Length: 327
Figure (cartoon, rainbow, N blue to C red):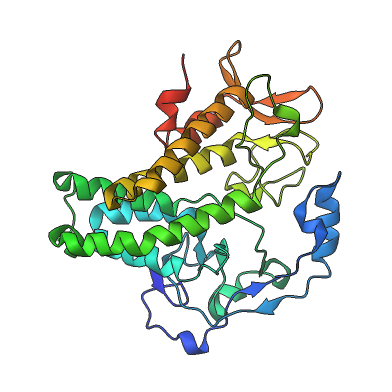
């Protein structure tokens, strides 16, 4: 279901009267999650959070469920839009732009957009606060990548007539507008979800790409989008998450393709180099050649927690997969 402003249905925008996002913009050290038992310290800090209402904001978005979840979810939206894109490219891109209008100057987009009285009525007050160090899988990059694919192969699209596909100059203008926003969000993700690589350096190779979801607890990693998928126990501040690294790889591939289309040659070289670095980290830090399975998280101790199911899923979304896995 697609909605406007309150993200809860086809409604008229009323942005001047809609409460904005509640944000804890403090820079508490506990939110860096670098200490042992970091999840306990972060939880204690959140109980004292002094949230501020930002906005008012307006969002044009699909919603997972009108009765139960009448609000926009960043991680969900990229999947919603992959369906919408095949039906109506112009509508899908309008929604993408609406989401990026909510991005702050640092590159953060709140992963839940609890806008308006209807949306807030479905969420207890203590869960309404959004935290600028919490990420979500950047699935909106999928949508832009799919649009670029249709743009270069118009015959692959059979949906509603598109002003973007009919007018190449408009398509180029859209990509020039969204490209710097995508780069800003990418840099924010890499900065805030960076992982410690000190314990994973190998002789002759200095790994430079490693990431860890913030917001992890022993029971859940809600920020990852895979809320209760098993991870190493207990959580450790020096673990690395292969799904986070794979999402960064997916962003880099999309940015590299856009840079080629726009003729941004310096950016193309930069993203190509970063793609190689990500492949190296995937192969050296997360892959077990003997077991033919990815190492899902690695802690400072020798124990490693592996999973067979998740890595191919998150990784097949990018071109890196065919270059990385040799079975």
